[in-house]
Image (tube, rainbow, N blue to C red):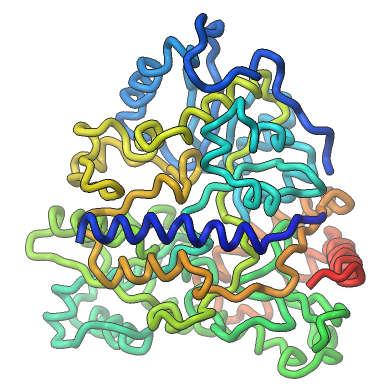
Length: 548
């Protein structure tokens, strides 16, 4: 697949988010089908029509669980838009979106709006399957002024696949840094200094095991493990390779793609469990398989700090918030909310945090690699019978701060309180009533709010990652894998990978090399080699056309 130029989108995203970050700080000390054109009925602007359209109920499918007071927010939305949109939203939440959406697509069941993502997600695979409507005609379109305002042409162009926009990018920054939250009161109890590095954190972990053996030292999710490969990841700039934590998305299997020094030839694509012979002809240091997967040894070493039932743990945040764990990994944007939750739930408790990526922690230029494609995306499935009406709802959400706030934060005064122009605060009780996965529907740099209790260092980090200086451009940045030729093989290997994934990402198997070889053999039997060959073929074709 091909994508458009990303340079202008990069600059635009950085400048937009920088303005919002500075404002928040100063005010308050985170070619699968033809295009579907909007119908004649949709060619009116978002201002109130003289006669409301006929009533309609849209069906939305999102990841996570339903917020306790979601119905109140939906009622407020219907109240505000009765004379303009005249639309009801029927939102279904699920813990396994990939499975649920796949079943609905197979059955031809109507879904008007859903969510997909990169990384371990299925965005490009589902585009190849023909799941999603092309939406480019709704953007940079005066009939949809909210979308035109919030999604500049450069950002839309950068996210097109084979000339079409199959997903709506949801983003505040190219990357929100990961952190480890840990109990400050325990750290003080053990007589330790504030933690700044993983080495210091390991000392803390050992103290937890020694002095508070009933506590789980570190709470992690079974399928996420050590931050989806980001903890213990090699921080070196990737110049002639795409590997962990920046694997190419959409291949089903995570391949490390190695290029020649001049970046014009694919030297190989290797994956976990490949025999040593597959690495032998690659240039050093990639000719040694352990170089690319040494972080898995770290996972095994650190597994002793995880709970015994980690393979069944789906909600580690609850474990930490309830005082049953001494530390938890997440991202820096959640710092203030986590701190408040812990303080209110556990008498005398408090938290601190540190950024485990040392380059980000020190605000070092080019700390992170990026291909300038957001992780999270909203999608309109092809089974939708109300594409225009769905896009009108999105246009409303992105037309003003007030509208965007309703879905992101809930009803002002009930679920949150406005602080300055771009800040917010909320009590733990308010957060329990309404905590919406805004990254699936309403996330946008133009309407970002920052928790008023965010500390100065976190503000600096969040401001830093919204500038171009924080990033370097990854090799093959504009390359998008077209899964269409191998979608059958990807559908076969993906379930097998999911079986093994929790074992590897949590370090639960000391003999991971042997297990990886066994898995690799099984994947080869399911068509992995065809996927690998297709990836190499497409990357080389991309390079032959001048791609970098």
